[in-house]
Amino acid sequence: MSSPARFDRGHTDDLMTFLTASPSPYHAVANAAERLEKAGFRQLSETDAWDSGTGGKFVLRGGALIAWYVPEGAAAHTPFRIIGAHTDSPNLRVKPLPDTGSQGWRQIAVEIYGGTLLNTWLDRDLGLAGRLTLRDGTERLVNIDRALLRVPQLAVHLDRSVNTDGLKLDKQRHMQPIWGLGEAHEGDLIAFLEEEEGLEHGSVAGWDLMVHSIEPPAYLGRDRELVAGPRMDNLLSVHAGVAALAAVTGAGKLDHIPVLAAFDHEENGSQSDTGADGPLLGNVLERSVFARGGSYEDRARAFAGTICLSSDTGHAVHPNYGERHDPTHHPRANAGPILKVNVNQRYATDGSGRAVFAAACERAGVPWQTFVSNNSMPCGTTIGPITAARHGIQTVDIGVAILSMHSARELCGADDPYLLANALVAFLEG
Image (cartoon, rainbow, N blue to C red; front, side):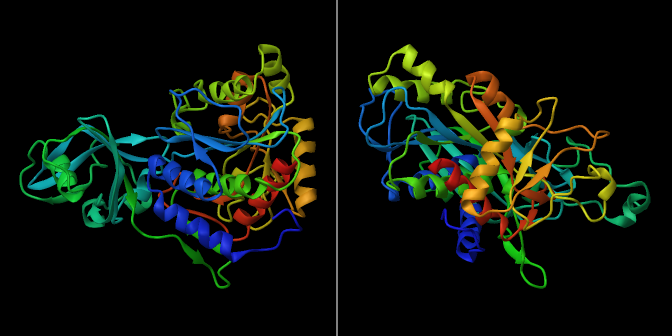
């Protein structure tokens, strides 16, 4: 993959398969783990003692995954090269007491997760996915990938001003999906899921469930040069990171340890035990150092030489809202990954980080672009500044330019996922 890049439809086809199979962060990390296991990685338990052996290893916790490859001859102070990403996407998530209804309609009570574009969830056929926790403490992934739910929009006849004054949605009153007719009864939804999964009635003690559009990803455009699909923010980066990490295993002598850190909860601030602002990454990296016989001094040396590429989607220039973008920075679809810059540290990139990313793209033969926000518009952020501040490691923010970010269905260039993966391989190869 590190040879000069050219469009590989197979990579984008595989991304579409990954998106479809990953309707929740828990499914995303399970699918990533399965791919890594096929590449020779093995799962470690956080409660076990870790050995000093070489090879690929990974840790799963909830909706987060940390994977790394220890090459032959790695010293305790060997630095890391990290690809950072996140597994969560804005959506609608099921409340603790889900069974509700009104006016003879049975509904599911949901809470808004992250900064989702509410209107994009209207009038879509929705499935339900996530994890169930059983009374014995075991967990079961669940994915009802059929038309189960729908958030119906009010007809234009009952809202004559919608096309002139704009659609106004109340998060509490207007976003509760319907799933049938009749009276709501407490326990109906969980009983339905128990039946679907072949579980004994009453065996589910907890759940983390969310809705998803069941419409599959698709190529779009006259020449099929675009891809539309769900959860590109940020499973596109997770998928590219997994492919890149698997590609560099056994690829020759490495003078660093390649790492993939895929966190949960980026969309609501990263403050959780599986988020970038939690201790998970630092704990894993430190334990890797100590498992190889290292001291705190070795840990400090390793971290001082570590570089992280925080890969997340960014904004492509919008054809209908060009004035919302910086007038001299217009990232375009299929023009390669973007370097994300903000001097107020909403992104962690600086000049030396730019040089690291540019060198990786040059080695891979990948074109790249720069994104900066319009000065009059607030700038979003990523796990990049959090990773840099929490662990004291150099971090560079990059990604792929997309349209419709935080929609139930986003849009990117069909070439860009493959170009990003090539750049990440070159970065990990160093």
